[in-house]
Length: 103
Image (cartoon, rainbow, N blue to C red):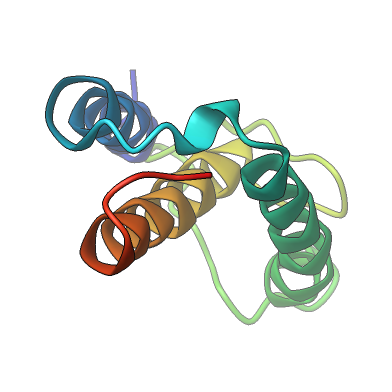
């Protein structure tokens, strides 16, 4: 499996493990978290789609580094995994630092 794919999957597993084993904020059980993730995904599609469109790419990927699956608008699916990991970790740390547990 290509390294970008492996790293993307590892990032998701690591962030989920951090929440379930260490932080235990409970954000995965809140509607606020999932609404926030839907908003992030919407804007990620807009921005990432513009950056990675095959007709005039700004960001290029080595074909051997990822699965080659692109959806929608030529976005490598691994980008969504990294996006999930980055935003989720930021939310987890913010909740943990601010109030200890999610509501």
